[in-house]
Length: 230
Image 1 (cartoon, one colour):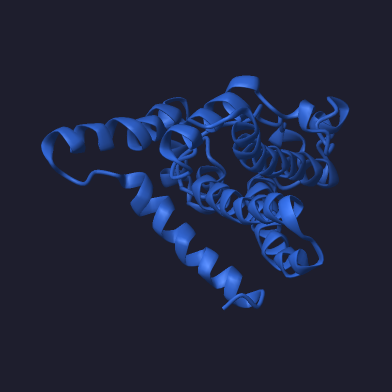
Image 2 (cartoon, rainbow, N blue to C red; image 1 turned 135 degrees about the vertical axis):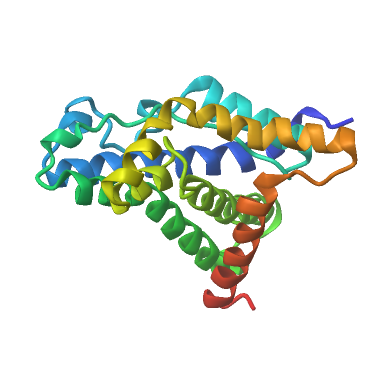
C-alpha cells in the first residue's frame, strides 16, 4: 500500500500538469477572442494564467485525478469551466470562431513541445527533485497532447466541432451545430459506455483509444524526436 509521501508524489506529478494544461487552454481561448474583438472573457477575468479562474473542482481536479490513479496513469478525462465567447461581437464570426477554437488545442501542442524540450535540463538536477521534475515534464507532454487531440475531435462542444462548423457549408454546418446539446453525451458514451459494453461482449469498442490514444502516441513520438529525444 502506498504511503502518504508516495501518494502526494503521484498526485502532484499528474495534477500540476493538468492544471497548467487546462489554464493555458482556456486562457488561450479568451485571449484570442479578446484580441479579435470580444472582451467578454477578458472582463470576466478569464484571460489569465491564474488556474483558479478556470478550474472546475470536480471536472478539472477530482475526476481526472481519480481516473489516473485508478487506471495507473492510462486514462484521463476531465473538463474546465468553458470560456464565454460572444461570436456575434467578432468581426468575422465564422472565421474568428475557428481561430478562437484552435487557440486552446494550439496552446496544448506548444506546451507539449516545450515540456519535451525542457527534459534536456534534467541533468542539472539530482535526486528527488530530478525525479519529480522529470515526471512532471513527461506527464505534461502527454496530458497536453491528449487534450490537443481530444479537443480537436469534430464533435460540438469540443473545439474541433466548432472548427468543423466554421469550415463546413451551411447545410452541413447547421445540423452539426445543433448536435452541441447532445455532444457531451456522445463523448461520454464513447469514453465510458462503449468500452464497458465491448468488455461484456468480448469486443474492442474502445473508440477513445482509436481516436485519441493512437494519434496521441504517434504525435508524442514526433514531438520527442523533434526535440532531440530520438
